[in-house]
Image (cartoon, rainbow over all chains, first blue to last red):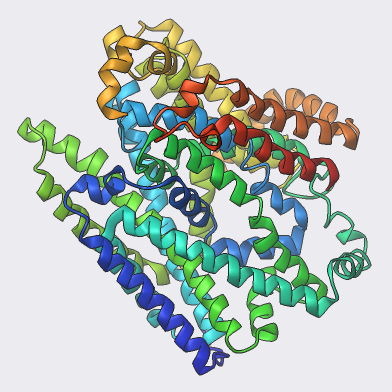
Length: 518
Length: 89
């Protein structure tokens, strides 16, 4: 990778070093409160709603989004904002009042753990492997993104950029666990908002304001006519047609993301009360309103200022290089680090939790017939955190050589969202759903989404039909689960006690059993 | 992978195409105000039910009964900006 000349002045460097130092100090401070694996994984169930809400948002908006989200806005326009707007409401409200209380009361740590209790070990194993693969590949990609950004804009060698991130994120995550992750996320969100807001303000100042930006882009030609429309006809060549947005994103992908993503579930389960857990999701839905303004509008501003960019992903780096004065450049870099680290720490913590909760603990119970020692679990959790971030650091440079593999992996993992939501929703709401139905729904649903993806361009009105594939694979998995469950024996009352929504919410006997978990 | 794709193109596509094509032709014929109405209706219907949950359910785990802790009251405040966005942008 060819290095660029650094644009940082000494004051910028001081801001960045002070920020990184503060993050490390926070990690060290929180290490004193971590006495058990429960403290590490679920922050001892002590987190307030505002910290979780901010953490959920900032984990969702990573450095990749700051660069490629703005790049997508540069290329496709405001329709990209649907991923934060229609992608948040009503999904986050449904998750807040249905899935969050449900997970909270059933006392699980991970989605595979819940599905394992509800449907059996085959579904648990299948889901754990899917999520672990997704989280690990994303870690490597995020580290590589940091290398690309820091190399392009600062001239820092890519290896140095990767290992700097590994060191800082690894240290505070290993020391402080989820509590450190969430509190640093809250701090990082403030820095991210200030940095991104400054970049947007300066960009709009340079253009001459909002109306000048709209006029400039609209005058660029017919291909930019839709750039300020949120809803776009499917007859226009776009990956984001309105019907796909409604069916694929609104109904399936957003609900699946917030109800089944380990990084989200783990945060809300670390809340100090069920009320905090629910309130955190609603607060996050409020904060998500601002994300397109801060992350996507700089992409549109870059289009107005620099319409000749060969790669849309260079929109934000170009604005940073050209517009930011000394001091603000340091702040925006700190914001970039914040976005990057908040995502890396979340995925790292979640991957470790899945290995411990869905791999090590069940395996120990099977092999030795008893639960593993908690101190041993805590030590193993910390060691695994270190091993995973170092492994991701070694894997990161290969992402550059195998970009098509990354793209394929992203497509592959998006295939699981629809079937996972179908199996989860039926498991929660329909007591008749059984192990055979769940496994068949998940397996055949994934095969369905894989098949539709391969021939999607011939079936749907888009060359990149992932939104339609998600919706129809969800419908298919739902039907398969219902049919197979009806054709096989129902689960016994004991098997589903405390695992079905109506029972958890309304049945007093079940609530008494679960009371100690609330 | 090419063989699988070819197999699906020869067997699955002819089977599914009439259904998906008629579905999407129907969707494409809807005028833009209907798109807007559909999205707004989905947001309202998917959200407003939470306003009618029982107070006990919503407040469970809350340290006190202060009025602002009633999460049902957060719903309209959350809903309005999202609705304005999809009505006017």
